[in-house]
Length: 402
Image (cartoon, rainbow, N blue to C red; front, side, top):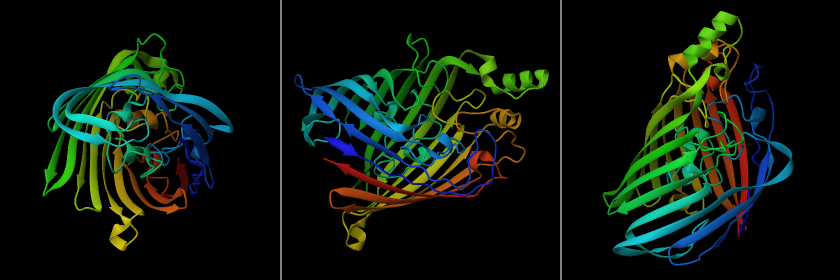
């Protein structure tokens, strides 16, 4: 079933800055077409492959804001359409008993029957966030929120290439109202690279424990996710010390050695009424070492709501509102002030640092076979710089699924 998602158009105003800063007054667009093909070779087994064509750029080539405003903009942009295969994986479900329930067919999922207690093994190329840190109300930039630090926990520095995908394996054990997940994934060849490590010598462990519950008869869940990355990374204090000794800008690439970086986060979703749901995310990660894959965030807290249009007699419409505060460690702040560049941020100097604060809202509605979404984001202290912003980001999405 092919899917078309064109036209995220974003406009903002900001003063000029350095190489990783937002550029004033620009409009950017992205589009993609994805085909979801799957076969079921035997009971419980599924093989899926997702060929895709992409085109477009993020704002400032996806730079300038740690909580970047478009989850549909990759770190790799192109003026011409290009083909790639982001996912090609095998999934096996082992039923262990308990209550049976119907599973509806969906993207990368066959319709069928499964038991409440089960084990699921996923192996191949896919996104770590296909399995971990999921949230019903904030997880899909094609359908709900767009900001990177709302659709995923900002501190979850998950293994991925520049498009957000990697090779690895995940195991999930569902038992009653609990689920335990674990996974091993390949890191990039170097931090923030388009090439994955071919030897798997740089890798990441991810673990998650989830509990599903009901409050006043309404479903919800809470999950705690942890990661440990092992690879060649640079410490911020070492980079600053070298810069002071040489007189040049700080650069973690000059002081990288094999070490670990860890983080932990909590993720809550809760239905309040039939039409209203809320979510909360929070996380921290090691702020002494450079981020490896995702973005430049060492601490984050986000909360929001999703409201069905049934509340105003338009059941197919949806409204979302959320906010997030992202922060950095004192070591990362000193690194950025010494001229260092991160994955997405770096204004050359950072004498007046402050938390990055983002507010996002969207309204989604159907137009024939399409679903249109209008989006607005307000970003205060972009790239943790109190001397920049605030930034207004206006967006529009158009999506069809067959």
